[in-house]
Image 1 (spheres, helix red, strand yellow):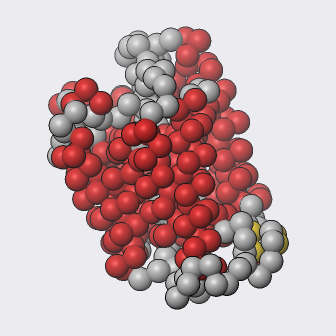
Image 2 (cartoon, one colour; image 1 turned 45 degrees about the vertical axis):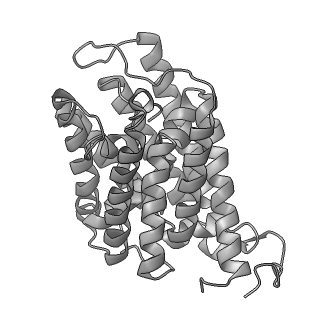
Image 3 (cartoon, rainbow over the protein chains, first blue to last red; image 1 turned 90 degrees about the vertical axis):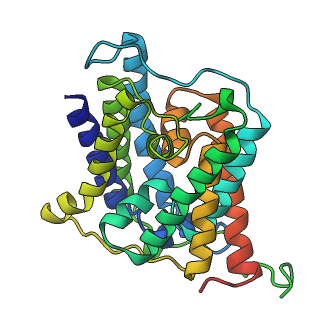
Length: 147
Length: 161
């Protein structure tokens, strides 16, 4: 049942990425290209997503437990902004700007058999594993602290 | 090949031809629904880099914590099939840069999302939804470096078409 719910969430998110146009690198780069011809579409993606997601998180947090299995929510702790967070986010943004892919659209693109998405995603998975090796020296901060 | 030799031709011009507010809004609502659904049913954050990353070597997902992650990724991979069956257009994603650039992009996104503990979905949607200051800082940072990167590549180095 848990797996079915997770599958449905991934499926819905993937369809959302397709319908929104976020799987298109040109669309993403058009949004980031403030100095050229600017395509504000991704602002609408973000706005629509936040509208529903914020309501869902508010509800889940008020309940405090998962609907399936009645377990406590697994949410990242409220820790302060640190250098590691900002350095990581900065590197991610550079990669996002170069290829126009972030992790979700990369994976969805693999299933569309896009050669570009496959190359990107393989490199991304290698990058993630490399990061784990580097971060392994500080196990207390390894893993998904935020998401 | 001076980065600063060519200034942008214009300041902010809206690309009306490619602006798709309707699809963007509907797709965004679906993405938000997926994140809401996952946190309500399983109590988990729909951060794609975290869900995938934890499955990789050194990612740290315990054996009992892998099933839902695998199912979520399979759902993502099944999405184009469902979309196509539903009559939704599924264009093949094409990047504006060559493979060496794409490999660099993938490595940066992989390392960056694990070091920075999240990506567009984890920080930009879920984190902002629960009012996380860390996610706000991360989102502003990756948007900022993304904008600067595109500016350099498109208007400075003119690598992209």
